Amino acid sequence: MVSGFSGAGKGTLIDLLMKKYDSYALSVSATTRNPRPGEKDGVQYFFKTRQEFEEMIRQDAFIEYAGYVDHYYGTPRAYVEEQLRKGKDVILEIEVQGALEVKKKFPDTLLLFLTPPSAGELERRLTGRGTENREVIESRLARAAEESEFMGEYDYIVINDDLEECADNVHRLIQLQHQTSASQSEFIQKIQKELRERKEKRG
Ligand code: 5GP
Image (cartoon, rainbow, N blue to C red):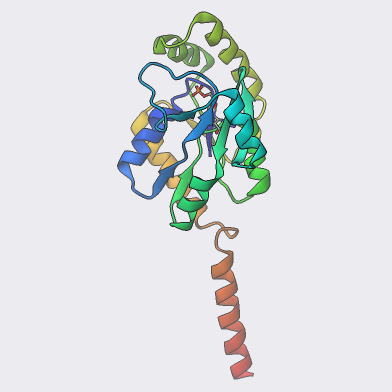
């Protein structure tokens, strides 16, 4: 899971990661917010009405969902499960509440928090994007202050200064995650069994 302040560059980072490596699948979320210019239904998000979204909640179609600045955002379950079955690393780009909810359900999920080097740089990036009015920018900065309170709960903090370097770092961290003892429990059981069998044969 990749979280980070709105304007931290999560979208750009993930695009680059997907371009450089073919082991990833990106989960497309559903949201009730309006598409930004250039955004297409089914590509950046599945754009839903509030009513449609609430129906999906009732059908338990989300792994998680959360309210963020007046809108719902949620991760549809079916695609994530299908890609995991295919052996892909599935990337969820979600905000803090949702990420912590997923971590509770699936503790071996890797939690990455992406941030610009400073608050001033964050405001510059949000303003420079030019897709939001001042009021929305202010509410996103206020939300960033709240989200920063949860940074300590993430596995890694990734500073997005140089984009290429940042993508390679993130790839390395994800690869390392495959070697944690929790991710290797099947291997551990296998080698324990082999060693036990040898011991029994000898003794
Ligand atoms: P934006 O409106 O800028 O595309 O996204 C706003 C926030 O919603 C971002 O922090 C993004 O990570 C988060 N978000 C996007 N999809 C989901 C989702 O499926 N679940 C949750 N919990 N947050 C999401």
